[in-house]
Amino acid sequence: MASLHTATLIGSVSILLWGTLALLTRMTGGVIPEFQLMSMTFGIAFLLMLARWCWRKQSGFVFIRQPIAAWGLGVAGLFGYHFVYFKAMTLAPAVEVSLLAYLWPLLIVLFSALLPGEKIRKPHVTGAILALFGCWILVGQNASGFQSQYVQGYLLALLCALIWSSYSVLSRLVKSVPTDAVGWFCAVTSVLALICHLIWEQTVWPQTLVQWVGVVGLGLGPVGIAFFTWDYGVKHGNIQLLGTLAYSAPLISVVLLLMAGEAEPSSAILYASLAIVGGSFIAGRKWA
Image (cartoon, rainbow, N blue to C red):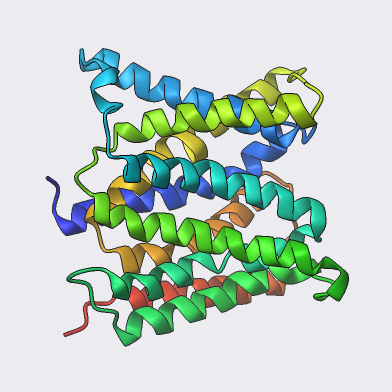
């Protein structure tokens, strides 16, 4: 079992990988339907875990037998979050949905106080709120303001934040469940997404090598390794610090888009960077 510090570092890998989400999604061309892309990428994530089992000469079937609560939590967290998020995007503007959905890191910090043996500290809350402010500056640059006709979408976006924060915090209560089991949660999520795709969408396959690279990259990184390392981090690491550091993901996304020439520098990016880095620094300091 890794130390608290090591587990937190492992969990932070997820944040780095989630930072590549925007660039890799851009590479897919934006033409692949959401549930089809979800099914493909979670399927790749399962194959990644399958490769790990083969390399270690293990039978993946031994990880299927998990408590019902762990299965419910895993599938509800992975599939439930994405299903509600996609639905929210159809009912409200994307920027406002993102602003509300990004409440989940702050909720992780707050909800973690309810865990056995955990104690919330003022620096964690202060840092998370400052980082949230920076995230909202970054994501909300093109916001048109909240409008009453989109209230259903806003509520679903808030539900997204509640689902992912609850999944992350409650995972601590099933820490005995190995991260390998997440591979099966990904498999079920892929199948459920495929069903949704067949019901509501028309299939559109990637047409270029760049699009395929984007799909495979999503499956290996932000959807694959990221969910595995996040599971380990929130179960065994400093969950409050991970919650605050999670606000770095949109900042990493913007930096990568800038480097790829897909975005333009702005004062909002500078201010958001200062707030997110400052909030992470406050939360990450060793307080007596």
